[in-house]
Each structure stands twice: as C-alpha cells, then as structure tokens.
Amino acid sequence: MFKKNLKNFIILIFLIIITTIYILPVFWMISASFQGQGEIFKMPFSWIPSNPSLDNYQYSIDVGGLAKAMKVSIIASALMIGIQVSLSTITGYVFCKYKFRFKNIILIFVLMTVMIPIEITFLPLFDLIRTLKLTNTYIGLVLPFLYSGFGIIYIMQFSKYIPDSILEAARIDGCGNIKTFIYVALPMLKSAISGLIILAFTFIWSEFAWARIIITKDSLRPLSIVVTHLSKGVDNYVNYAGLVAAGVMMMGPILVVFMLFQKNFIKSVMSSGVKG
Amino acid sequence: MNVLISKYRKRKILNTRNYRKIQDGIFVWSIVIPAMAFFTLFIYYPFFKNIYYVFMDYNYIKEPTYVGLRNIKMLFADTYAFNALKNTFLITFVSVPLVLGVSLGLSILLFNLKKFQGVFRSAIFSTYLVPLVVASIIFKLLFGTESGLINSLLQSIGLNKVNWLTNPALATLCIIIINLWNGTGYYMVIFLAGLSNIDTQIYESAKVDGADPFRIFYYITLPSLKPTLIFAAVFATITYLRTFVTVEILTEGGPYRSTETIIKYMFDQGFKYGNVGYASLLALVVFMLTLIISIIQIKLTRSADD
View 1 (tube, one colour):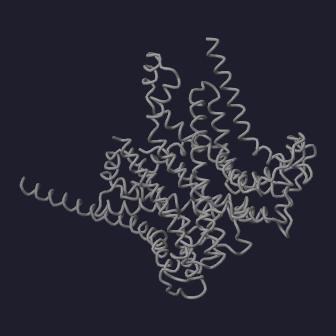
View 2 (cartoon, each protein chain N blue to C red):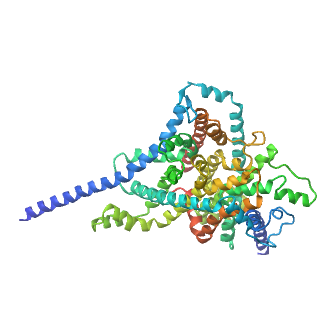
C-alpha cells in the first residue's frame, strides 16, 4: 500500500512539473503584457508585475490597430461559423437520413474533398475571387470555408443516433421535411453542433494563409495578419512588449470561451478523432 | 360498398405517398445540389486548375501562356525545392513520433490518475488552443538572441547566449518544439478518448494473471489503441507536412533556407515571385504526398480491423 502511494505521488509530482512547463509560456505572456519593454526579458522575471500598466495594450491598439482587427476577426468568425455549421449540419443530416439517387457517388465526391489540402486550392482560388471582385471583402475572406467536408461527415456520424421512428412519427403527424429537421433532429444534434462550432472557431480565429492572400486593405485585416505584422516590426522596430499584449488579445477570447465550456471543447475534440 | 371504400383509401394512400416522395426529393436536392456546387467550385475546380497551370507560364497579371513541360523540368533542377522538401520531411518525421510519444505517455499517466485528472487535462489542452500565430510569437520571444527569455536566463546563470534562430539546426529544433508544445494537448485528448474505449475487464484479468505494467502496455494498451494511433499518426503527418505559419513568423525560412518548407516555398513562388505555374506544380507535389499518406492510412486501418 505504501509503495503504491509513493508511486502515485511520484507520478503526481511529475505531472505537475510537466504541466507547469507547458503552461508557463502562456503565463509569461500574460504577465509580461502588463510590464515595460525593459522588464519582460529581465531575470529573475517578476511573475506578478510590480507596477502593472496597460501601456502595451494602448500601443497595440493605437499603433497595431488591434481593436479594428478584433472587430474584423469577430465578424469573419461569426459569418463563417454561422454559415458553415448550418450548411454542414443540414447536409450531413440529409446524407444520413434520406435515400436518394447517386447517393454513394455524391458521398464519395464529398469525402474526397477532405483529402485535398486546403492550401493547394489557394493559388487558383485567388484568381476566382478576383474575378468575382471579392478581394478585400468579408465574403471573400470566408468563402472557401462555407462548407466543410469534415463537418458533413462529423454530423453524419451523430445523425445515426437519431431514431428513424421519431422522424417518421413527426412526418405522419404532418411535419414537413424542414419542420422535422428543425424541431426533431436539431435538438438531438445539439452536442454535435456545439462541437462543430468549437472546431470551426479554433480554425477560423487563427486562419492566416488565405487572409494574407485575399486582404490587402488595412481596415479589413484580421488578428492573425495584424499580429504577424507587429511581430515583423513597424518601421523596422519591434515593440516586444506591445507584441506580447497583441498576442494576449488574440489568444484571450479563445481561452476565455474554453474556460466557460471546457467539457464541450474536450468532448468535441475527442469525438473528432475517434471514428464511429 | 366495402370495395368502394378500400379503393378510395388506396388511392388516397398512393397520393400521399407520391406527394411525400416529391416533397422529399425537392428537400434533398435543394440541400445536396448547393453542397456539390460549392465543392465543385471551391475544391475541385481549383484542383484541376492547378493541373492546367502546371503547363503554363502565369503570374496573375498576363494571360497564361503554354510552356509545355518547362515547369516540370525546372522542378528536377531546382535545388531549393529539394531543400524545402528535405526540411519539411525533417520537421515532420521528427515531430510526429515526438508529439505522439509525449502525448501517449501523458495520456496513460493521466488515465490512471484518480484525482485531478480534469485539471491536468484542461491545463495541457489549453496550450493546443493558443492560435499557432500566437504560439509562434511566444517562442520567437523565448528563443530570441538579443531579446529572448531563454538567453537572458542562460546569461543570468553565467552561460553564453545561444543563436537559437540563426543557427540552422537550432532553428529547425525551435519549429519542432512549437509543434510539440502546441500539439500535445490535442493528441493527448484523442488518446484519452481511445483509452477510455478499452474494456476495463481485459485489464482486470491481466492483473489477476500477474502481468506487469510494461507487458500490459505492450500486449493490451497498444493493440487496443491501434486505430486511434493510426488516425493520430496520419493526421499529425499531414498537419506537419503543411508547416507554414510557424516558419513564416519564426524564421521566414531562414537561416540560409534551412527552415523553408514546401508550402512556404509554394506560396513564395506563387504570390511573391509570380511563378504561378511552378507553384501549382509544387501544390500537386504536396497533394501527392498527402494522398500517399491517406492511402497508407486506409490500408493500415483495414488491416487493423481484420
């Protein structure tokens, strides 16, 4: 018994050390964002700022344009998540619950899109978006992400658990297809949908490659672009303390949402990996 | 009388059936057609356009002109492209076993923990949620030569500064460390899900039979986790083969192109130097690589199911 307790104690200590190493960089960033340029690399580092100030945040908003970028990122994320999640949900549901002609071929057509790395479509897509005159617009920023092959498969897997008898009962009671979907299927897909929202949010919030191609106007740059821009320096000068604050502002929303919905986050990632 | 009613009923049932069939058809196709249109326009059309561009000289300004196999010949003579592939493979094939090994180890330790499991899990998982852009910036500030936390720590204990990001081998190491730091939370959670699917009775009977922890790990845990491990390995491989953001922020491909990855080289060729035809060829190389990995996954999963 004593030996077992000792073993558990050693494992616990080991886990505490590893976890601390993992979260230390995040804590350093948060703490440093309230300190001056001279203090953030100082040794020993004062984990609790001695004279906390918001100057860095002021800098990243005034010089870096972080507030504007935050607005762009929020609008783009809301637009992309709203459309992608609704479209993927209803499409996944239809693929699971309806029989129709050429279903298998169409399903393969959808499944194969998952095998194509999204970045390789960007070179020709730039041409297409330019022809549609959608560069430097919110629509252009989110257009390639409005459907997700992965999202459709994800919802299909969960739709299996909706009993056909309940759907049939709704139909016999006179509900149309749309009503049946909204009032019967949607409530049963709630946890899958919240999972999809979380996965979509973590993706679009840090999307960088496409935004850099499609947005050239300052006022439409999302956080990922603006923060990267700050890290390269403004007028050949990198304000490290300001950059730290900008980084905190970018990761802040996602970490806050995570703290509020921890269980959902972890569950959605768990179910994204295990097939079935 | 009876015959009449049944005839009437039959017709009514037939009519409602037909009506429902038409209704269902309209619903299904109004959902499926837009999805197909989207994937055609935004995935398949660009994909085939890439193949078309391979035989063209194109820079987004002039009309494309046919150049035959010039781009393909160029690829075989391009040492930068091979260098980019080499860097990408190095980053990928070091990152994948490292990230998966650490994640698997942590997930097994956590899984057997009676208390505080949730706290450790959430803490490590939160590092996965730090956007890659921010993660790259954090590590740029940790590994900076003049202004970097690690160097000032080294100096404070009397050691010399290290050129983390200007030394080719160390810069690659830094990219791998970001992958490890940012990826562990994700794969750990995936493995925890896999572990919780294993029937606990197998463990019990193995313990009763007197198997030691290493045997249990080798003969029970690993085989039961095989499908999860295959998924994780393939997903990680495809993710790291597409390394771009970390490199763009941390080193911009330097020093001496030692961290230039294939996606970074592709974007530079396409958007910086206006060699869209050549960039499209590089895009197809990336596609072929991921395709090979996906096929291996399908083969492996099938053999795991048998």
